[in-house]
Amino acid sequence: MLPGELTNDIIKRLNVIKGQIEGITRMLNDDKDPEKISIQFKAADQALQKAHFLLLDEVFRKSLALSLVEVMNACPGNCADAQKIELLKEQFPIFHDHELARKMKEISSISNRLAKHNQESQENQKKSQK
Image (cartoon, rainbow, N blue to C red; front, side, top):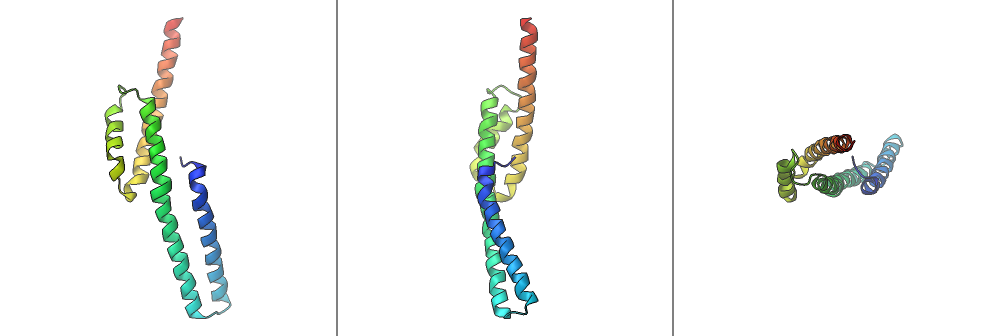
């Protein structure tokens, strides 16, 4: 559902954060300076928040846009979901971050219905040509 070229940066960031958390664990086990541990916690927390923001704003939003374009191209304007697709297209710029995952599922569902419909249409055309 999420293109790899969009998730690579997030995965790299999460691996860095994982290393930071492992470092904090070592610092705790080694009874290091509490102030340094606190600083590392804050750094890891900020990095995780930034990765989450990028996931929502970059990855989810771009994935949704790509999927929306695909369903718009698959629906010539007279498909069963044409009105829903048009509404999603109009609302896209104002989607809140917390709505993106749900909207991605909606688009995916529409895409699956369109693919099935288009496949059935092609099969029916082949049958009628015989």
